[in-house]
Structure formats: structure tokens, C-alpha cells
Length: 92
Ligand SMILES: [Zn+2]
Image (cartoon, rainbow, N blue to C red; front, side, top):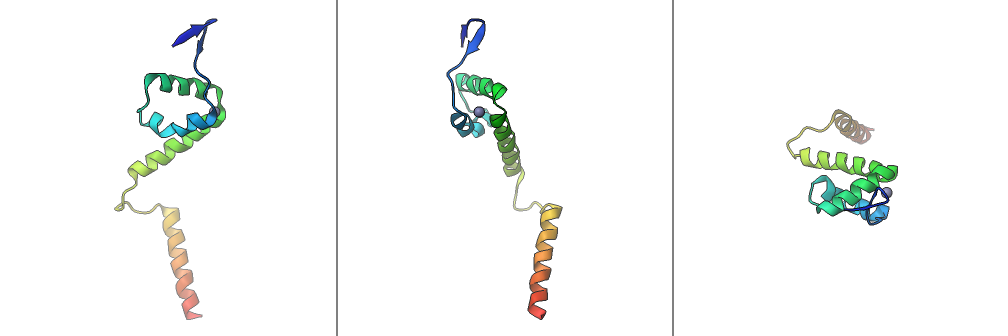
């Protein structure tokens, strides 16, 4: 960590580099310096904060998703609708 003119100076990372590491960041698999660079970038960059929030939610879903889990209500009613429409079509 370098202190210059009273500010912390990190290598400048482009958004693409930051977002490419989102899952490693969320899984806490980054080296300390990389983590700090990303933290610093996220403080300045709303776009990457959004991307990380989205990836975090996605990752949580993946982690909790199991084949045994029941489908969410909106998905289940959509499936039932599709089935009903398909069988209606067969009769008509
Ligand atoms: Zn960014």
C-alpha cells in the first residue's frame, strides 16, 4: 500500500478487470493487494458496484439452488400456464 499526498494510491484498474474478478472477490479468493484495488475502484465506480451486487445475488442463487428445491411461485405458475396452453391447443 502506497501513501502519496495523503491519498492511497492503487494501480488503476479498468472496469473490465475489476468485474472479471467479481466472483473471486465475493469468494474472498483474491490477494490482499487485489482486494484493496477493487475496494478502491468500487468506492469510485457505481457501474462496478452494480455489477458486483448483481454477481453477488447471482452467486447466492447458484449456491442455494438445488435440484430438490421447489420452483419459485412465479416460475411455477408460468410453467403451469404453458402446460395448460399446450393441452388446450391439443384439444382445439
Ligand atoms: Zn468500474
